[in-house]
Length: 63
Ligand SMILES: [Zn+2]
Image 1 (tube, rainbow, N blue to C red):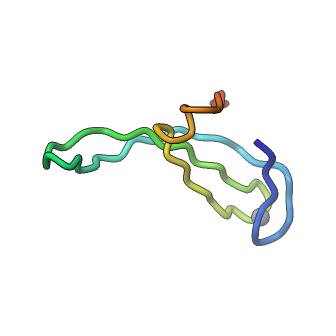
Image 2: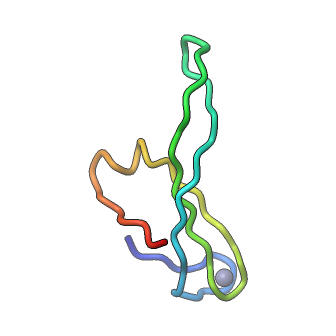
Image 3: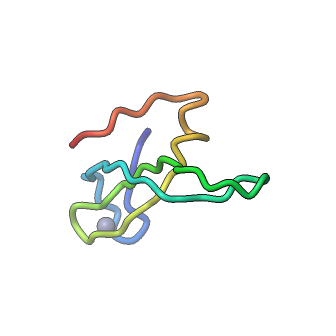
């Protein structure tokens, strides 16, 4: 995935994985995985749902 910061146009970023509790249609709580892409220049953060993303593309988060 190419990344360009929407705010400053910087191309350097860091990927983090985070977990959020989310409600499923059956009202069960389940943990959803999200990727955070953080601009190393201004700190602008984009959030992606790993569930959606992993269907067609594999993203390897760097820790
Ligand atoms: Zn930026």
